[in-house]
Amino acid sequence: MSGVILFRRSRLNHNSFASIVGALVRAGLPGGFKILLQNHTRTLPKNTRIIAYSFSTPELAGVISEVEDLKRRSAGALLVAGGPHPSADPQGTLQAGFDFVFVGEGEITFPEFVRAAAGGDPGPSIRRAGAPIDLDETLHVAPEYGLFPFAEISRGCNHSCAFCQVSRLFPGPMRHRSPETVARGVELAIKAGFKRIRYLTPDAFAYRGLPALLDAVENAGASQQMLGSFPSEVRPDRADARLLGLVRERCLNRTLVLGAQSGSDRVLKLMRRGHTVEQARAAVTLTVEAGLTPHVDILFGFPGEQPGERRATLDLATGFLQNTDARLHAHVYLPLPGTTAWPAPPEPLEPFVIHALRKMQSSGRLDGDWETQAACGQEILRWREEGKILI
Figure 1 (cartoon, rainbow, N blue to C red):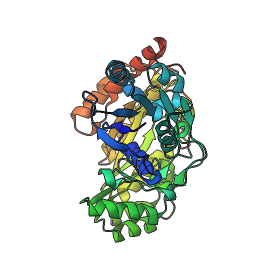
Figure 2: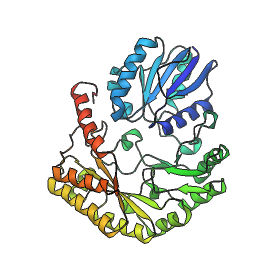
Figure 3: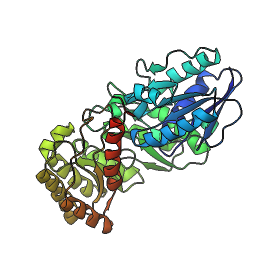
Figure 4: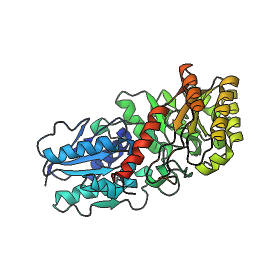
């Protein structure tokens, strides 16, 4: 077997494909295989043998539609899937039409699969990651294919928030790339013409040795570094004057993303956040004192949340807007397979919540796809009722 391995690229999977493509390059492609990244599947190269998807739960309906179409047009091509949703619901993903599903990290299992497929025996339909990989054995970039995503400095998370799939996707303790390994990847990005380096981590201040990281990346040629803003938020309980000062002095961003989530300590416990409302207030104060603008995440509709607790979150958010130059980023709880909260439905938002959020949004101080998320949450639950999600 030989031919094209086509990666179905989307706005949301750029980072994951850089890691997988890089792993394939390092492992060595079997003779006769080549890699192609494509933003659609409307046309397929001749001799396409493997079509690879990586997707999250909100993308499920669109992916199913594409797969149904591919099944009619691409006889003989193996359809494979990985990422957050397939890892959480591998049986449902197979039912959707995929031939193979990769659960968890794919840097080892996917190259093994390609070698096996090249030999004519792809093996089991569900492939689960083994021991977590050493991030210092891999770079976050794949320069051979022009893939220079956010600089992934950490993987996994030490906090299993009840609404988040990260701990299911990457179980075990949080892992970090060393400054030297991150810098090697950044140096390749700089040579390709990139100047601004954004870090990727779910818990920015959990990285030990941030000064060494910033030094190494600066020495690699980066003139602009961004830490603590998307996609590297800061937990309120990790807000620290010294680290905030480091961001202010060494980084380009003047905004810091803080995950406050709720104005109710009871709801924060339900979410398994591991911090308190008072810690969120203190983190906002410290951020302002450091000369940075807080960009505060708030989340509504978590299962078990009461109307008074949603009002408390609005009060917390309003206080931030009145007393600081903070901005808000609003979310509505999404039921996601593999999370602790699954499959509990979101709590409905009262008119006073919707009115308040729209008013803040119209003022220009609140952003986020919260209305889209509210509709998407209902769709996800309907997909489960229809049997598209089996977990």
